[in-house]
Length: 108
Image (cartoon, rainbow, N blue to C red; front, side, top):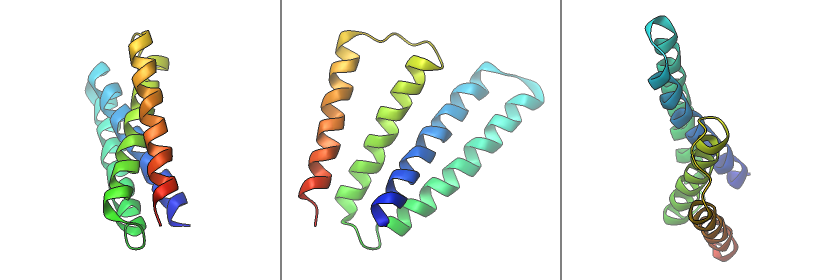
C-alpha cells in the first residue's frame, strides 16, 4: 500500500511542477489559481511521502519520489509545454525509469 501512496505522491510532485509552469504563462487572477494548485499539490505530495516513508526505506522512497517527479515533469514539458523531445532527453529519461524500477526491486 505504501508503494501506491509513494506513486501518488510522485504524481502530485508532477502536478506542482506543472502548476508552476502554467503560472509562469499566465497573469492576474489565473496566475494565483495556478499558485494555489501548486501549494495544494505540494502539501498532498509531502504528506503522502511522509506516510510512505513510515514503512519504506527513506533513501529508496525519496529516490523513487523524485524520479517519478522528474520523469513526469519532463514528459509534461514535452507534451504540454512543447519542449523538445531530443534523443538524449528520451535516452536519459529511459535510464532514470530503469533506475527507479531497479531501486524498487532491490528494496525490502
